[in-house]
Length: 79
Image (cartoon, rainbow, N blue to C red; front, side, top):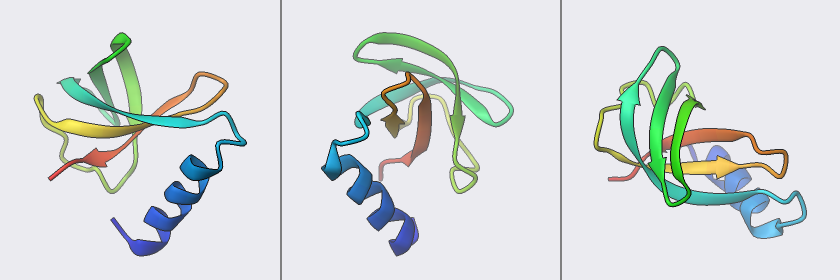
């Protein structure tokens, strides 16, 4: 992940002022530009992913950002 993107995500997550949060989840299915996830809150379908996460695979643990409005986005897989 590029340094500038990592710094931007870190700033948003640390601020907490947006109501955003992050969590880890497991990829359960791969779609076109989306993935289905199994998260601590249960299954979540058709979550959009960043362009940099171009080769998602079932079973990967991923970093997910969530907004106060209920939107989810997958940042990428953990090493």
